[in-house]
Length: 111
Image (spheres, rainbow, N blue to C red):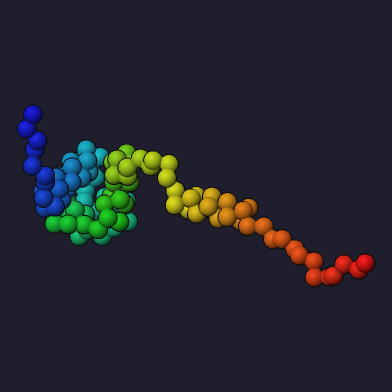
């Protein structure tokens, strides 16, 4: 099986832009209405749809406005259960349990 060559950034931007445009039209929205619903500028929607680039924030807002949260979920890989903060707390707790103070009496015994 022959693998397809990787898409360039420009190709990804154009493909995403075409999908966003298709979704907007399926929702019977104008670019202006989508911009208002997503709380972004009209020029941001036009740039996104034309594949001229967009900020991640604009893409997220537009996808949410088009009810496509599942697209965003696909961008985030599943976690393997690793949390650096949890490891830190585990190690810190372990160290504090190991370190114990031993008091030595400074008094001398009277005989």
